[in-house]
Length: 543
Image (cartoon, rainbow, N blue to C red; front, side, top):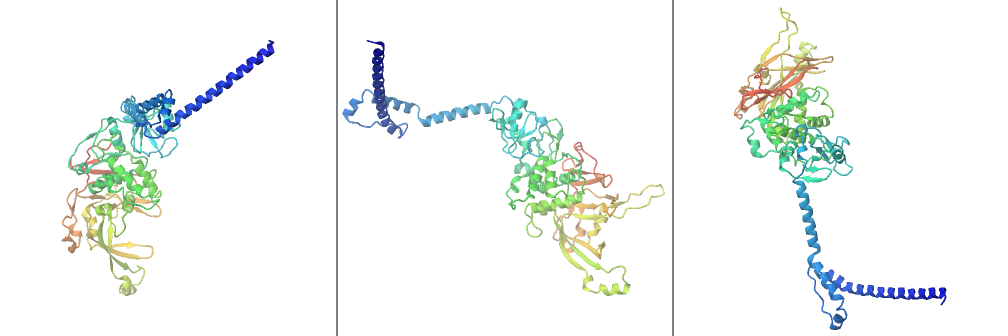
């Protein structure tokens, strides 16, 4: 046989074998498909309880060599490793692994509590975003996110800082491993970030005096701590410090549940003032602070925003103007109104008085014409009821000339002399651009806490003058009963007041600074809170 014929025969033989193999494989595939059909039907049922269907004897004998073996194997696989059991084991394995890492984080010793400061605005130091902000507990900086491309993740990889705190959820995370850290030793950090007070703790604030120790070893009294002067905000610091030592107002803002459910119109920014004041109050009275001072940065930012930059951090302001605006803004933000709806602010500080007003004729008119005008209804005395948050006391005019020793005499006046303005008898003339009025005042209701504002500054078109007159006043038992009308005296049982805070302005009107003295109830000593260092016992304040 020739080579070509041999190759043809070999090719034909190979083709027959391939066709036979394809046919046999096709048969095997069809047999396997038939075998899988009952398995699929059984697998659609319960994955654990598999029932074998009863088949005719002829079918069982024909498939005895293949089908029963496969079916029994499938049943064993389902029984041994069912889908719910696999999910439970996988879930338990994952949870156990996370719990093991979460509770045994190797980086907790890298936390540096001395650099942690949660008084500033919670925003990323790179993107300046408030969303999803984290604090690095190693360096104290704020970063956004914890994903693969986030600023916190990059910071953790670049500087090997691994422990982060979510400033909103108060949860700790380890980056870049990205697992939650659960450890009871970190509770002091969350308490500094968000202090909380129970009703029992609030009730005991005025019953016990206990010194607290900060992380750096300094001791302080909760509530008697310094407020940082960022630049020229001491006028606001003094007012905020004084208000934080008024017990009813303090107790109200120490418990966030008292005001967090107050409904405000959409887009209202004034409620931010309430939130920031509550946060500042809780930080001032926190017995577990890392530092013996507090920075009012977020509070002052809310003041600048809500006052539309009337009061600023970088520019000195008037303490009386700030007090008046702040009390009224706080009352309005809490949902109060001028007449009907009251708030904690009006309950604590609001009193009432009668104002008697009489219009005066122009001084350049002839005497006869003045007499005729006084009989008109327009020039008769009128009376109105008015409320007040504080009482303004006027000082006598300071001397303009020096004495024989070439020194200016600084006059002194008792408190009760300038309080005579409200006895209902003393009249004072008030001038406007066109008209002059005589007014007298009489108190009809005394608030639980009374604020006196001594008017030292007078403004004109050219400059601001400061009256240096010294006011002598007692620290305790200031009785105001004689300034009430007779019918009101019977209603008011308690008319005496004790001093709890005193704000003083030092220096020139444009260059001076404010400081505050606060009474501590247990040592009966006044503590000076002018700056960070002034948390030591000071002299009793007389003026």
